[in-house]
Image 1 (cartoon, rainbow, N blue to C red):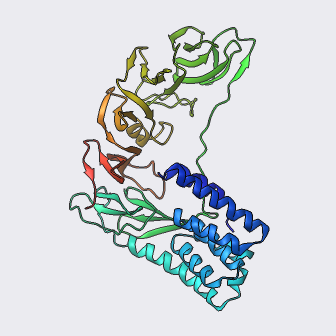
Image 2 (tube, rainbow, N blue to C red; image 1 turned 180 degrees about the horizontal axis):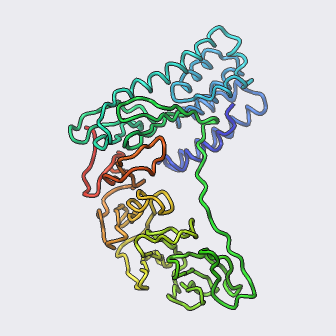
Image 3 (tube, rainbow, N blue to C red; image 1 turned 90 degrees about the vertical axis):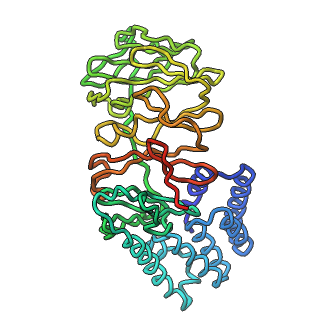
Length: 425
């Protein structure tokens, strides 16, 4: 049994757009199935795990159904679900070997098929990647989605280069990467697989970002202290403190004094009164000092503080301490990634996503204007084509073009800075 499946459920509920009633059905079947599993009543548990397959045909869900079928001595179903698990990307051979829930399957002559399924699955992935034959950098190849899977097509010819079989697909420079279940494969722009990585346990580790710790002190009457380019100590008169170094010689922080938020400098001088804005965030698109406080290489020399008042009105304050209202804006999101020590971060993080009238658009922090006006149901990420080697380090290479992954009319696809839509017909 894959006991990390509870986390898979949480991720499933957060990342798949389904009705809340359907989410309740998923959770109910999971907990009922696990209850009977823990009691040793595997025949009663099996239908609940089969219902989970209907709701989320994921490799781990198939695998758990195979385990319960094996324990209930329904070997035909057990092998069927195990095959589907492997062909959907389950590749944790250590877990397969050690999992006693599968002992009934292992004692059957059909167990020999398991190794064949593993070899066949990996071989099919390599064969699909081999269809990629491009001049480096492969900037004309764009990921496309069909039926929840991803492949590549040529944005000039509009022709498919690969079928959509991958769970995710990167843009390609001198190399690229695709995910398929537990597999991550790195390949060159000529379609040669250079490395295959299998994620043991089936869950990718989230990248941990550095978040500094600030210490309150009665010895500081107001403001805060900066040591070695980082904010370390702040006055205890503040209820809460969020510190940011914006420039090497200009340091600001957002503080809560109990009845209002304020933007202060290191001396404690109020640079901007943020009263009546219960929600606010600091967004620096030149050098992200929240996560890299010792990095004073502020490329753009600017920052924004986004504000949302009790009515939902959104505004922002610039580095010149001018407040601007974002008319009709109801929400906003930042792109993925932190820091500005690499060229690609500077190129991509100047764009944020803003919602108006239940549609999302792309807003340019440099121009303080729309890059693409709201028209999309969702905007997921900012990405790029680049002249670099993905396998060695995604941050290598220079940006060629910027793309945004969006959703419209239940279809996911990429658009560029001019709002050209890249959809395979």
